[in-house]
Image (cartoon, rainbow, N blue to C red):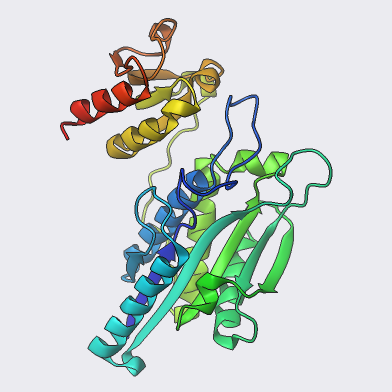
Length: 303
């Protein structure tokens, strides 16, 4: 049997209006939904690949890929595997990662919790949702909002078995802060992978002899490399640079509150003054304006 998963990280990083938390003073910015969706979907993908499952990303990159384009690609891949191996010899599912929102404000009523959404009347999708929900409920304590039947494009237009995960609320103060928590991202991605494997009838295999890293106090943490941005105007190019270098991204204000030592700090936008105490080496990529900054980053990457 061939097992295939189509993973979708939902909305793009910059283009989708409203897909972000309210402004968070402690960070000096809002958190965009894709900042949670993409790394969580990557942890999900890594776990599945480790078990021999084929994974395709139907929303690659940071741009907002239209829903129709995503479902067209999902159906193309579904048909490709059916034609290649025969419907009886391949199982293909789609899993879309999201973070919910209520009213876009931290004030007033702030619902919280996780839910799994399926197309109304889809029995196979419900079976998959039950498997995934079983593991999502075992992790970080959140309200379990259940399996929700909802008419959504991503599940309606996909010709196979598809589910959409809402893994918290962006306008709930506590859950919003979980979005950037790497341990939470990994937990959610791993739990979703365990559920998919169970649906496929495959046994989850923990990593053999994992090396336990000693817990360090926050003030002792040393980071090899990081990117710091001055404002939201620099966030786009900063995110692209952090992706290329596979390192963390910090806002100037939030970095000031972090007890970190960074071996190499790339500054994207704004002055470098005051950052020397945070790093062993400052790489100044700030230009006269955001376009000049982007040009400097592109030149630095050799593109």
